[in-house]
Image (cartoon, helix red, strand yellow):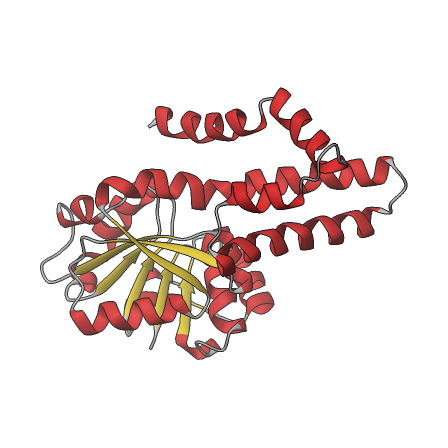
Length: 260
């Protein structure tokens, strides 16, 4: 399977790094184009994909064309490539560019799958939201889903659900990073080294998340299991509730959705 990336920003780098690190693809299978050739070459050396000088080169023999440039640039990219996209299978990882939007501008025969990824793809822990509406052929869809499945979890959503899904899975890592940073700051305040605080906090988050996924238990049940009567954890829970922790988490997602 050969991939052609148009754009190689943070999200595209995470995907390329994930595919290569997981052994899902070889370096020769990923070509990428970006206007800043110097930066592209540096990222290629770091990650291992093949940089090319034009978008047409990236698209030429690709089984899947990954539209990973900025959303505002996509219409011009499609115009510039013209018939080079005819008959191609396109994977859109750009916010707001769903199937309906592509169908209005693509050349005849081009097929589309809208995917909302997130940056933990780089370490094979990504969440990939696949829009249920797709024009990929059945074998193309199966191959693409299997590819993403090697570096994370694939979740099918309706077109109407892609916005909220992207807000949680796409923006959520930044919010979790803020929480990790805050707990690490508290650790440093009370005598831990920065490295100790970050390692234990990040592993704690990873372990808590895995425990919920593996057991399938409601997070509230898992929280209650740690809260002894009059104990340290319940005092911390009460402090978070007084500060509006859960309400603020909901507000963060609301702020994203209402902006749309």
